[in-house]
Image (cartoon, rainbow, N blue to C red; front, side, top):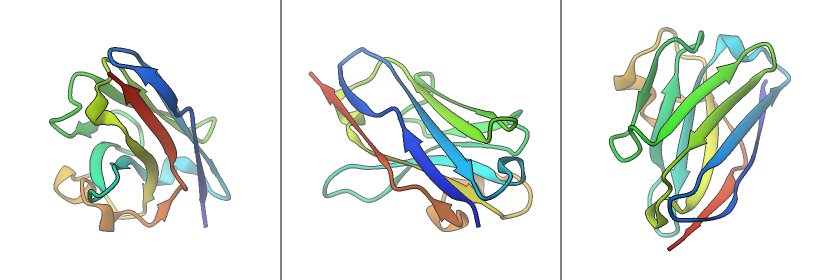
Length: 128
C-alpha cells in the first residue's frame, strides 16, 4: 500500500506562486494515475489536475487551467503541482491521490472515488 505525503504549502500573496510536492513510499509511483484535489472550508473536495502514469498526458479543472501544472518524476516517486498566478479563491487544503484504475480517462480520473490512496494534505493560503 502506497503512502503519500504532501509538502510545499504555505501563505502567499495573490499573484504569487507555490510548488507542491507529493512523495510516495511503500510503492512504485509509476503504476498509479496521480491526481491533485483541494478542499476549502465548508466546500466539497474539488478536482484540480490529474496525470497519466507516464506523465505524458494530463487534465485540469477549468478553474486552474493555464495557471497550474502537474508533473511527476517517477524515478523520485514524486508528483508536483506548480501553482502560478494564485488567487484568494485558491485557498484550500490540497491533497494528492493515487489511482489503481486501469487506463487514463479524464471522465474517470477527475472524480475522487477513482482514487485509492490519499495524503493528509497541505494548506495553501492566498492573501489578497
